Amino acid sequence: MRHAARLRLVLTAGILPALAAGSALADDIPASAYALLPVNFAGSSRTLPGERREERLSSERALVLSPSLQWLTSTDLSRSRLEQPYPVRAQSLILSTGPRIRLGNTELALPFDTGREASSLSREASWSGSAPRMTVALGPSDKVKLEARVSSRNDPQSSRRQRSASLSWRHSFNDHWSLTAGLRQERESDTLETAMTRTDETYASVEASLHGGWRWSLASSLANSNYGMGVGAGTARRNRSASLSLSTRYPLYDGWWISGELRTRQSWGEAETPQAYQSGGLKLFRNF
Image (cartoon, rainbow, N blue to C red; front, side, top):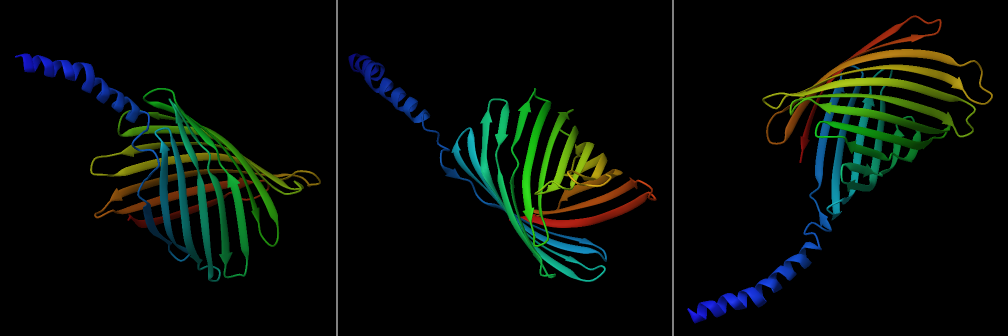
């Protein structure tokens, strides 16, 4: 009994406080600090009959610096072939990198994008830009996202700048249904801003995750574009458009997915006959 009492005294007075102090010290250094998460690769192929075929290979990697800070890097390599009116091949490479910060209910991402494109018409173009975005969770079912984008594009014929801002709201009814609605304004101009295009757009979508792995999305948008604005520009032209799309995605096996999309778009220009466009396609891709 005396030995048991002494053992309890030693544990209480010496060993247990030391273990607690060591545990508190370990908690100050997150186990996930400086962890490099596995690379996520994805490849896809999409064909629009008689018009366009594209192949894409993308990768994503996250470097966890702390529980609230990650450094994200993604690459996207694509190749396309346009069959009409004559064959044109193009290749592009896009790199995006930057931090993502979580502060309570707020998430802030600050990516920097750069890319280069080359085509069989001996034309090359390069672009760079930044797209900071902030997402705030208003509750368990609602999120608000504010995004701004600034980019510039250079090719042998011109140099252009694009700026846009958007505000969207997402509401989740339950684990399967959600609604998203938002506003976007985009401006595109040359470096001297002698010609400018401004587009104001409203959009909304309903997403559903059904049993069996099916995912469906019904999206619509209304846009109003003004062309030819800016210093020294002539009379601005206006164009309105409306679009509606239905897309689905379904898991096959061993990491393979198949997705499809149907889209219709109608536009109205000043003193022009309304035009309608329909498109659709299937995409097969796999995460490696």
